[in-house]
Amino acid sequence: MELRFGSALSSVLPGPLAAATGTRTVSVVRLQGVIAAASGPVPRSLININAVEDALKRAFTAERAEAVALVINSPGGAPTQSALVADRIRGLAEEHQMPVLAFCEDVAASGGYWLACAADEIYAHPTSLVGSIGVVSGGFGLQGLIERFGIERRLHTAGQNKARLDPFQPEKAEDVEWLLGMQGELHEMFIDWVRARRGAALQENDDLFTGEVWTGKRALELGLIDELGTARDVLARRFPDAEPVTVEPRKPLLARLGLGGVLGPAAAPATALDPVGTALEWFEQRALWSRFGL
Image (tube, rainbow, N blue to C red; front, side):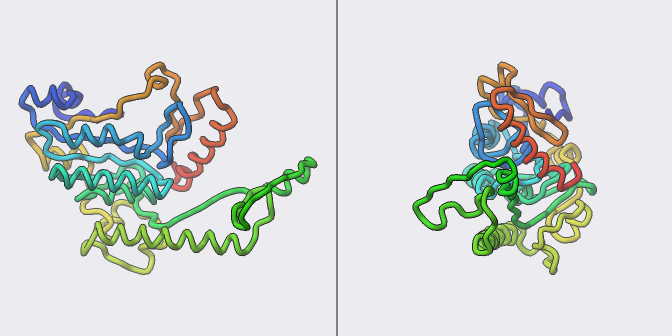
């Protein structure tokens, strides 16, 4: 969805054209969707380093740009992709000496909040859902299902830990212990990132890093954000002489041909190339959104 405020023409001008008119700009990059590695040739509403690299580079290198605004609406997802995108934002910001502002919309939780912390300033609406500083893993135990249908599971490995948490075998206590240890390590990395980015503004308490999610109003009290406000109002106040310019990634060929599906809070599977895989992917993504009532 395109941000439109100020001059209708200037808000959609590409960087070079906006610069040619002498208009100061703020590059606006929308980070919308579940954070996950790309899973196939048909684009989804996903956030990952490959999907956003082009838009981020153009946002930070746009002529006459005074700042970069990240509009975030994400329930989280893959820790590595969250870190890769956040690290790229920080690298570009330092390279181009460009201030970065993050705006949390419906939800900036878990990996979505990791992305927000890449900004120098974080804003949210009072009703936004912010935080969820934790790590979660999910799966299914399907051994009973294959037994019911008389299916024999054949699995051969070299290495005793190669098939940990296989969904078609009974869960083992040592596998769960290993998983919890891995989650704990990732959780500490998440906490370190938040502390490093939020600094003295953070009001630590016993619940802050439990995976709890808060409204924008409460997040302000905890120091998870800097101020309540929307992109429209804050950018108009902070950069009154600049026009917001939406910077979007260049779409792959299938998307330009209208074959790509969009999986957001209310969308459904939209491709017939792999109906089973698409349905499973959709349900997994819906589960992430539904944890926050979206």
